[in-house]
Image 1 (cartoon, helix red, strand yellow):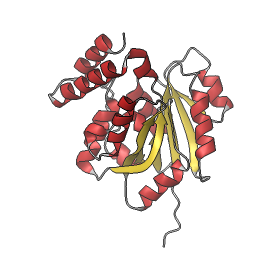
Image 2 (cartoon, rainbow, N blue to C red; image 1 turned 180 degrees about the vertical axis):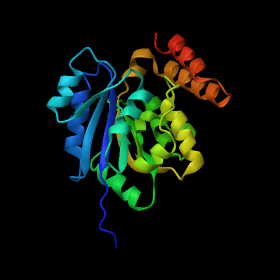
Image 3 (cartoon, rainbow, N blue to C red; image 1 turned 45 degrees about the horizontal axis):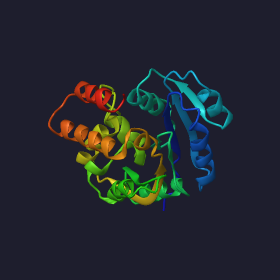
Image 4 (cartoon, helix red, strand yellow; image 1 turned 60 degrees about the vertical axis):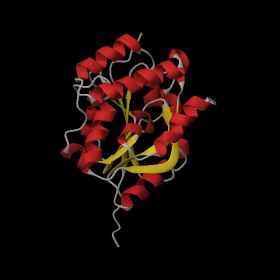
Length: 234
């Protein structure tokens, strides 16, 4: 039996997230079940608030990058030393013993996967879409569910496509679904409902659905971004 014990590099892209970075770093510290998280890499895209100083105060290594989540996550991966990369959105809080769950999935032979999702909201509408994340189909995936992947598999497939200003997680996960079995870990990551509450739940979910459809029909990354700017970013 092998005594090899892989380590995890956690990669968190940020831009002006002073209100959330402390929460996620505390959740990581509180919920980790091992000492095999090798590093927490906060990749900053040019914050002008206190994000960087807070991240350092709570034990993260800060790396500077050009703005853009795909580019920032790629920079994080280039600097990561762990055998497993764990990409985490700043407003998604990992569950208790999330690292042990990832190691267990890895030991079972899984090279890529994510957690199921819950929102920090009592909305039945959002609860339904969170329930859908237990379905192992790429249409039910998204960056808020976080993503674990072996360092080797990530780099063999050239990381995130930086042409995608939005939808970078979905595009990458879509490629992984074609290559490897995708593991859905049953524990639930808790993500913020802030965007839904700010923009209207049905309205925002409709526009997310339209972006999925446009991508399926062959829309280019720039078209998806223009749609996002017109309907979601306003």
